[in-house]
Picture 1 (tube, rainbow, N blue to C red):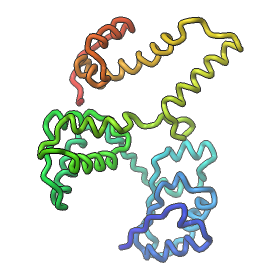
Picture 2 (picture 1 turned 120 degrees about the vertical axis):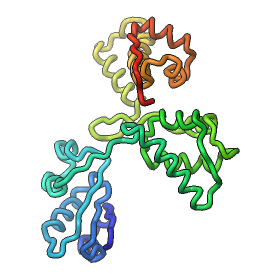
Picture 3 (picture 1 turned 90 degrees about the vertical axis):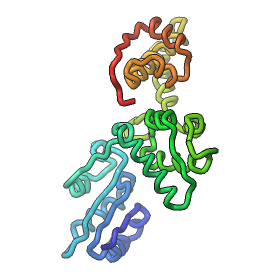
Picture 4 (picture 1 turned 30 degrees about the vertical axis):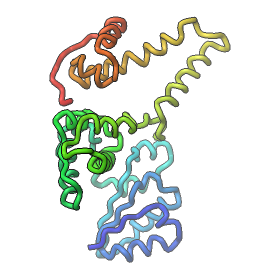
Length: 265
């Protein structure tokens, strides 16, 4: 049966809903990134859903944003939220299902070879780096990275250095969220610093601000990196890109407690 993917532009005109239903012909309709639809498009979806006859198409909707939060902020219709929320499937990020990363990477290599690409395989060190990366773009980012590695690798074995060269030019983390909108870490820090200066009412903060701010950033960064590497200081130093002796000194200076334990990464 037909599978019709609907974007906001498909609902821009009055006859958009009728055209969508005609294309679906009792199959399935997916409202893609429904959280980004404007008020008028959302209203047309509500009227469309209420007007379905028999046989009605299957209805699905996807959203990367939290629709419940958008509804609370008045940016998503409550009636549409409850019409679409019969069964909700939360898909965890790739970083939350680490064991899937090597399986998917090998799958994309196999598919590339099947489609006529060169034979490629990962060295153990290269696969370890792929497994340890945060993949803020999830499966799509992993797929595109593997495609680039297949093309750019010099030999049949893809090395850690080649993986590092590709991943080094990509973001290490996904944007932080602020009121549901993507916000870069630098913007979040800038807001925090402006509030800090404002709290002093036009008087400069005490001297030593640079080191105090660095400490506030370094402390959680090193603690989280140590947690991600199971307390392995050699791996943590490699992850952070600093010398192991530098890491040891920072652990001492920041009074960080290190606990060794087994980690997936």
